[in-house]
Structures are given as structure tokens and as C-alpha cells.
Image (tube, rainbow, N blue to C red):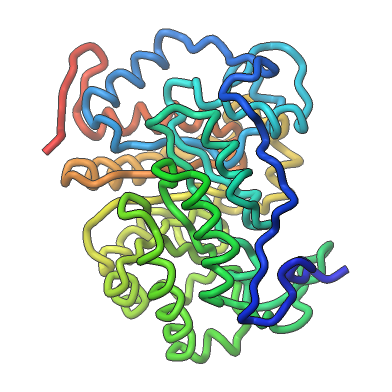
Length: 362
């Protein structure tokens, strides 16, 4: 079956409806259904050192939170289903000392409404921030066959500004408020016709940014993530800088390594750093999932990528900016354990001792 825009938003381009049929995922910040794991002394100390050094400007986290294999890492040892964790696990996740953000990847597949965002926000503390992915019906240039992902036909709503405002910007801003950390437009692999027509693509991007950026809270980032290495050009980075949009370093098998992407992104200028570490180089999602589930240990430690990220994070924080890094289980095998190792690398890069407070706040 083809993946098409949902029926509730297939009306005229200038008459966009927003879904009203979803209820908040929880009515209370702590519904008691999912217990949090006991955080060990080492992890608490890491969190304390990061807090002392960077205040609340560093947000580390994972891509979603519904994994039963995180028992003992994020959840207590009781057996939970993916459904239980998806609906009720965020409050326990947000109690983890190091997990101060999460990437809402579900919004890439289906837009959610303001009430659902608000239900998520109520499960988290004031310093928690959400990284929201814009829906594929806005960020994919083609409609795709559901099972295979093969392109079916052109998407008439690709980078449509009015649709972006109605489906993701307005609901996320209303529901999350100050807890909206970043809105990421991840562009799916583009057909050759778009890659050959750079001017038309930049014009379409420009119209999107002119609508979205002013509608976002001043504290929230608007960011672009790529799945085509050919798009990573100085011209695109200059375009993003012109419109106040950050480049999101998207670590994926289709893209260059972290250091290469960060070097290219320098053309967009200094500012807040954002990265989504999605996938280990050389693997596909299904391959990593099959090999590494249930995601309870590091399977393929990638020290080089961690160190590159640590350098970029510390550089941004030392200049007074913020940093957001979310990590997928398919990056190294277990996202919570990757966060812990990245936290250690950041402290080493910053020269923060494990036993003495140090601040690099400007």
C-alpha cells in the first residue's frame, strides 16, 4: 500500500485540517505504572559534573523510549511491553539523571496534536526538552510504498509551509511550550529531479523557513537534517545561516562521518549544536535491529564518533551556546549506555575532573 498523506489532511492546500482525535498519553506526570531504574553513583556523578560545568545548556538523550531491553538501565526490572513503555514510560525515562531530552521520532510517521504533546510535557521536569521530527508528508519529496519504501509518485505537499505550520509547528508550540527544544526537518532521499534543480529546492526551503522560524519560540531551534550527502554544500549552509536555521548533524550510513559533517556545517556559522546519532556506519536499520536487540549493551563501540561529538559539544558550550544530542539504539547497540559514554567523553574534552567541580560557563 502507498504511504499517502492521512485522510484528515488531504483537503485543499489552503484548507489544512489538524487531527483532533488523539488524547494525551497521560494525565499525570507520575502515573506509577512504570518504575525508574536506580541510577548508580557513577551516573549521578557524571550528571553532577555536567550540571556544574554547563548548567542546563546540555541536553543528551535517546531516540524514543519504548524498549523493554532497557530494564535496569532506564526502567526497573519488572516486565513491561513496548506498548506500556510507549504510553507510560516517559516519566520514568525523564527521571534518569543524564537523559534531559528525547527525539520524538513517532511524529515523522504521523503528526500528533497539541493535547498529545501537552500530555508528554507533563511527564517531564522543567529542564527537559523535546526534539520533534516534522512529518514525512512534509519532508519527503515523494509518496512511497509502505512496505518497501519505493517511490510511488511526487508528494504535492513537499516542504509546504502552511501544512508545516498546521501539522507540527502550531501543535508542538502549543503543547510543549518552553519544553520544545528543536524542530527537525529530516529530508528523505531526494529524487534526481530535485537534486538537479538546486535553485528551486532553495526557493522551496526559503518559503518554509520564512513561515516556520518566526512561529517558533525564540528558545527553540529550527533545524535541517539530510539523507543526501550531495546536498551538504557551502551554498546550503549559507542559506541556513541566512534564515536562522541550524544544520542538524545526522549520523547515518547515507551521510559522511561526524567530523566531515561538522566541518561542512561551519559555513552555517557558530551557534547551538544539534546532532541525531541515528545509525552505525556500514549498517542498515533492520540489520542493526536484528543483530543488537534487545539493546541492553554496547555492541559496536564507536569511540571516534563519540570523541568528534564531544569536541563539537564542548566548543558550542564554551561559546555560550546549547547542545542537543540524541542517540539511537542502532548507533552502538544501547542508546542509554551510549549517552553515558558520550557524557564521559564530553567531560574529558572539557577538562572537567571527576572529583572536582569546574565551570566553562561564559
